[in-house]
Image (tube, rainbow, N blue to C red; front, side, top):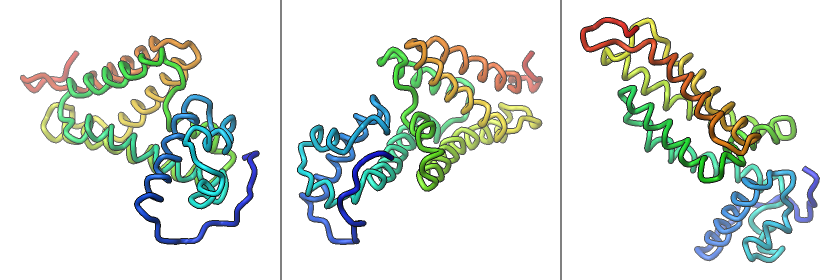
Length: 218
């Protein structure tokens, strides 16, 4: 990935509490920098400076930039899934989907739509560069999509969605709208395209809703 490779591959070793804190500090710094600048534009020297670590400390935990990036994929993925579980694990209604949509749009508006999705931006950069990172990102997106489809399954099982609704396909469409919305918002530096993309996907899901009377919505 165009960065120096100085140390040999790291070996499994015990890490002290201080070492754990240093490793976390490096990952946090890499996460901040690579979210704003991107993976390829961020060097190990940038990460060392931002994390206030020495070269020996950094290479003690990460053999090279590729290893750091792979660990960051796992780190960022865990953060995203933790956030998404808060909004989706108990999803049982269309209003819950709207609240989830509003939270994502509001969070992205804090940056005026800039930078996009932390996972989506990494997928764009890494999918053709690092097969292992691509596979990890794909697994994380699948887990994210499953949180949505599980909620849609609960809605269908409770009678809120018609029986002919396909939760997996609806979840895929909603995820595609979300990621496309992030991309367009980043290009425009405005969250409006993200709002439009999500609202159109939600309108499609809404077409499968069942009224309290048991009749499909029109």
